[in-house]
Length: 109
Image: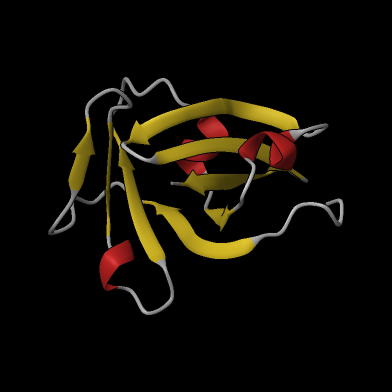
């Protein structure tokens, strides 16, 4: 990663097949998530519906997520597996693949 992009740890996303109390559903993505708000360490549980169209690597492997100031700068020259998009108001996310693992970038605000 170039010295230009400042990374701030945001969360660790862990895929699960088990429903969890407090899940939030993202209809457009066919995914449930929960836990981040209550975790001292930013652990977020992700549960995907069978017909979720996100890349298999995202649905089956944990991912690290970092907050960045400029998402387009963060993904420049990287293997982008999910293009920048807005799953909720005020947040833009994108995923890259790094050495076989998904990495998420979030631009908030």
